[in-house]
Image (cartoon, rainbow, N blue to C red; front, side, top):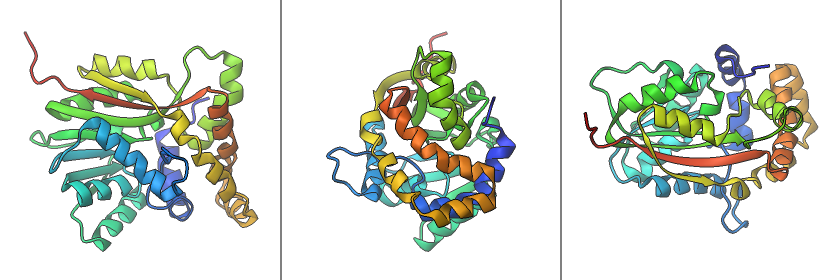
Length: 278
């Protein structure tokens, strides 16, 4: 069964994003632990810093933040690198929350409600970097996204992403037991890393680096499981609906997936060639 339906994802994030903000903070993504003693908030910023460093992001770039959520990465990139950021999300509620956060910080960031599988920009709008953290796994037309993303990049531009993947070669029973509860709860479809690399190559970009960060991010779910010990949170989830209950259920599934090495957290850096020979 496919759980990453666009309408379902939009409705889900419109409804529960304020709750996610209260649970997760301004960055709705994994943390990255180097030493293990970082706080969750420090680790979440650590993931952003790791992606910035690997991608070689400098000052003043035009960046498209795909699946920007409530604007955490976009705001960080503007505040610390003077980037000109456009963040896109399916959710009107998320775009409003992100805009309010940027305005509160006195930062100029453009947030738009847009389906990343159907990117709509003016012909003269191009970007130096397309950035995405844990969003592409929500897409059911990933190949279409990568094709469009490549066209929006300037020559020499970079795609910098992290996402969740299923390990290559899992049996049907392993996928059912270990990955399907994650897909159901997180409203995603877990491809393999090799799938993404092929789609990016087909789109005309050249992969420069990949990195398996699973061991650095798995600690996220120790904190996640602590958060959901609160029975009032489960009652809120039951009041909201099944999707939120499945989301909370998937915290334990995420931890199991990492422990079994069936779930992988990968970083990918890819560039658009400066020029092409004809």
